[in-house]
Length: 227
Image 1: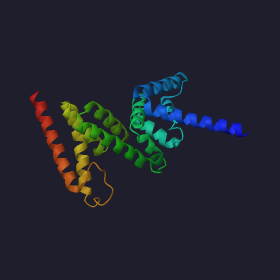
Image 2: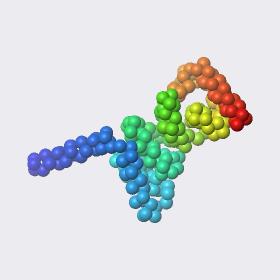
Image 3: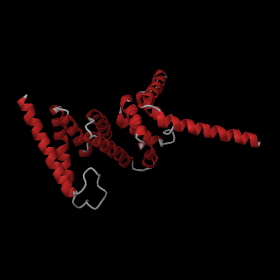
Image 4: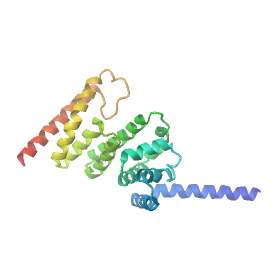
């Protein structure tokens, strides 16, 4: 009996080490290929798209214990296999997946989705500041899919497009995001003591950020006119 228990214990330890090794040293490309293979298997089974995307997460180690309503809402908002796979690769690579159980336990799914979008946006802003504009765009597009009607997801992507010289795309996002930002800023003074998104900081910093956005928007219009 003792030998049997020792064997079981050894198997558990080996499995744990294997999982740790794969998560720590597995490449993003390998993760994406594994997920794509899983998706293809579900596709051949004839499952509807929304169920394929859900099962892609619900059967993945580290995600399978998350509440199903949370996973369904997340995959619904991400919308495509490319977005779902990209989201998994990004969150696992940078450790954000470790925070998902806490967010998934929230009764308010909208709060959970907004928290995820804020993380993606913040990470995109960091990459943007480092000049990694392609990677920033990828993270910011995911944030926009999860929260499509928030200035905190619309305007950072507009800035990335502006920095890439994609002025027409930037203008479209600025015109969507600036009114939302202004409405938020008007109501934020009384919220200043609350937990505002870190991207905005103080009320004065928000006002300065709003001026910066408007200048970029106006510069986009000038450059489009000059083309």
